[in-house]
Length: 361
Image (cartoon, rainbow, N blue to C red; front, side, top):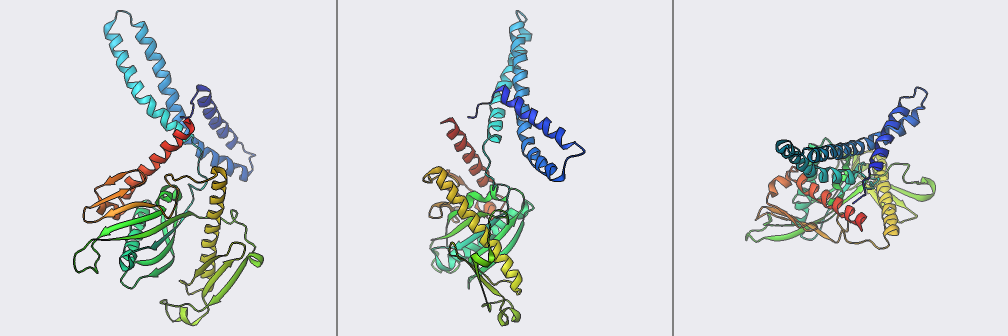
């Protein structure tokens, strides 16, 4: 675990005081104030955790002295020893909370995210399951006040989606959803099954942090080939009779993004560029991560799409996350979005424990 010395705690609290003093300067330029405010917002919970550790350690020191000074006063000694025991019970949790707050942050954690769900093996049932997963994430997002904007959708004949892409906007979206990337498997009796047999189907989920324009430099004149054509499929008369669909090819990488859900060519181009920037940003993140790690290990949150990460068993009403061996017998609550919080919280805790263990090593 990260070494939490008194000097480190004092440095954290001193930096917080320094930021407060600098932000109160009347001559501070606006851009500097914004930068300091961001640092202060990030440091404030760390300083609070540090203050709690400092307070508990100080109380423990005072109470330990009281035990020594109690002498023959049995009542005083017993009272002090009881309080010492209570502080010693609280202190490890407070130190762990501070250590977690000091772990290196993923720069993308506070970003919005692009959610992509694709039906896998299982035909119509896989598409229905992809639709169920999309609704689950919509409900989870709604409960947190996040905004879900549909980017593109390829609906299946019997319901659900062959593929659906959406933007999820809000604070800390990627931090919460990044562990959802992977293969999700469902075991249930499909609506198309007349014999009552349980089938196994799958859908792939990918969660990518959304890029900002400053993250990815694109020279539209040199890097992009933009083709427009008439949309196919539903969308109204104007969709099918005007060149509103947009296909963007990123020439340096060969990435292709197609957008035709909107009636406006301008809106389709804007959505396609948003998706393209996000995918390019994720490619660069993966490249840098691979360069740092040498070879990516199989770990929680790796996002390896070939990895089966979770099974939803409808006959038994349970959901199992295979990465951490957690089974919850509350499948209906999970599919409604509320129970998903328990899975995500457990995955976050496991990730924090793994990163603390790596620091120990």
